[in-house]
Image (cartoon, rainbow, N blue to C red; front, side, top):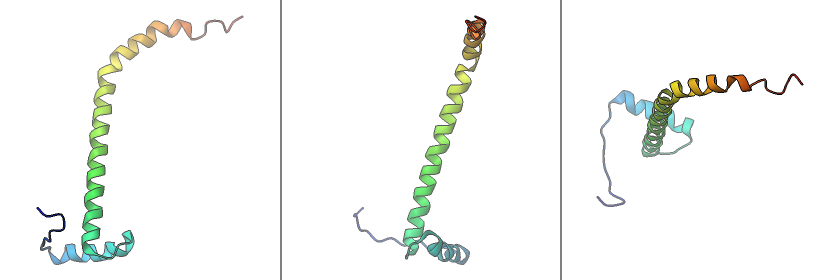
Length: 83
C-alpha cells in the first residue's frame, strides 16, 4: 500500500454525525483526523489493559510467597524500638 494512498469508508449517518460532533471537541479539522485520533486512543487503551492484566497475573503469582516472607520477617518489625 502506498504511503499516501486514499481510502474510503462508508459510515452510517449516526456515526458521521458523531464524527462531526467530535471534531471541535478534539480540535481537528477533518473526519480522518477524528478517526486517526480514535484509533490511537483505542491502541493505547488496549496496551494499558494488557499491561494491567500482566501486572495482575504477576501479583497473583507472587502473593502467596510474599505473605510467607512477610510472616517470616514480622518479628523484626519492632526490633530495637524498646531500647
